[in-house]
Length: 475
Image (cartoon, rainbow, N blue to C red; front, side):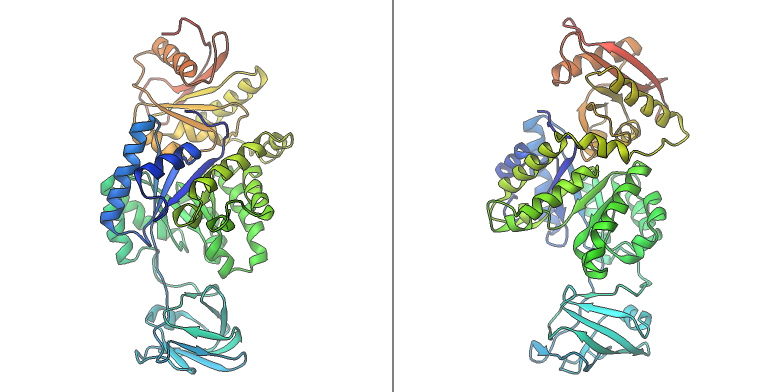
């Protein structure tokens, strides 16, 4: 089965989509990678879900990627004596280290790192920004605030701190336990929540030791401010627009989304656009026009993947949501303006052999109107460089390593095939042409361009281009 679109679709698994039968339906509707949200999944269920995805993978005969999304630090206020309290703008309200139930004047904040880091003038956003507080003074034990906007507060509501750089890493104790558990099951990608600084990625990388690739979720102003460094240390980025839209002015999010997408494309790192893409399809069988436009913008920008959250995890129409995303993406990519927009944002290749080869492969393929670019890739690097070029022709990534093919299933325009390694150059060409024919990327007489590293099985040594004919006698 080959997709007729280049952008990939991530579908989050949840109560509405956790059966093997439903996972297969979601794949057939267009899902390329499945996301397991560890905020709502214990280890036993996670292992069950991974097993079901791998069973679907075996049934459909295509590599399927799995992304485990770690919860990250969840900051919440304590409980109130009356469950909730009414507040009025202008009044004083205090967050402190006293574990007594809260009142209309104060509440317990069980996070000493917040109490010691917030300074006068900093904003505190409660319950996804429904309540805005501004710190007047802080002494390390309590933060005295003025209520700026909002009318109430209740038990255990989340706290966002857009102005405060917290001295805590992105990994909590729960995340470390979850990370060990998901790595043991062989997931392909791990998403790190609430990244603030490049160092936040270092611990996850150290634990992962290459067993999974690390995706940095950009959802805090501090991460946006240090984006180049974070891109350098991550394998991919996710524009997590939910918390980003709470911690930053909501009207700034579209521009930030474009900045992150373009920066990731320049660096050749995959980028995922996430949150509320087809939000109304949680309860409705069709999306709003604005949501269709939102999805199309991400596709026009050349994002590697677009993601469904509650739509596929807990909504009433999970299959329809995936199918709709598939239809939108396919239509956008067929639009006459699409190629021009993608080409206009293409960046100069880096001064490496792999980038030069990838650039040449794209230019040759487009000039000669070849059927496909076929990249041999053991580590996945050759596939990444090919996708960075955003060629008009399909990319077929051939890898002898199943894990590499699964990881590359997130990648723009890349069709992954697990194939035994070639024995020599002649075998490499024969194998590439045969797979192009079998997978529907060429018919007898068509030409393809092949990129690889010579000598074979040398990671990161992409240095060969070869144009070959797909023959009817390819064997």
